[in-house]
Image (cartoon, rainbow, N blue to C red; front, side, top):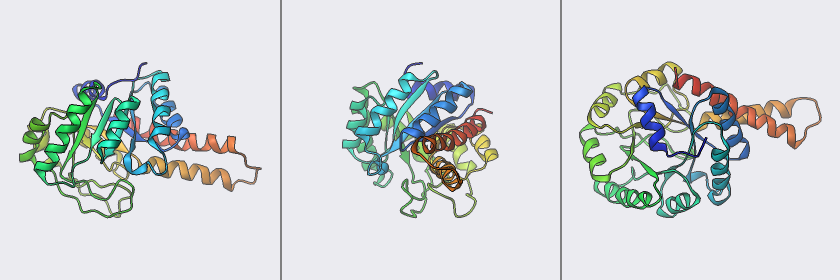
Length: 277
């Protein structure tokens, strides 16, 4: 299957009331594990990387690997820039061939968020790429370094924001948060329902790691189409690697490689089944 535009993938899923997993990756093993799970379940997925991860996984190195893996996949795969915070990151992702980008202007005032997001939409259209933006502010931070308070998406501004910017997807804040939840999240389904009834584009949930399977399925029924999974995959990979390194056998890179692939694969496959139930 070819590398695909995320808009086509999510539009199809929205019509069929399915959720699409967007899985963050940080190395070759994570890419391999995610693609393996997608192929075995015959399910399209999104692989993505956030700008905050570039210090560990430089985009100019991991980006081409993500593109190559998507092109070789037996199922549709979109390649996405998650939480792009600078125009330079967006430009590089588009130049590398990413089929969608997110510009996260949620830390700006409303009008400034609109202005900067519109600039990214104009740029992305030149590459036939789609754009995700965030309205409100998801709690925590993508790299887990900050405990940022969530700011719910205002349903009354959602339609205006989407209309003015021309974005293809909208990330919403409804009590979800990045990183590991310190306590069970209190998801505002009433806010989600109001947003879903107001805008027609696919809605995105960030901070998926830690939400229960049943809540995921309820969120999808209430209008979420794209679900981001990052922390859970990093944790699953690390645990599988730790298990391998604790055994009494002589260790080597190649078996460690397989352990990291398996850790990612197990987590991605689980979530694929949940989102497509």
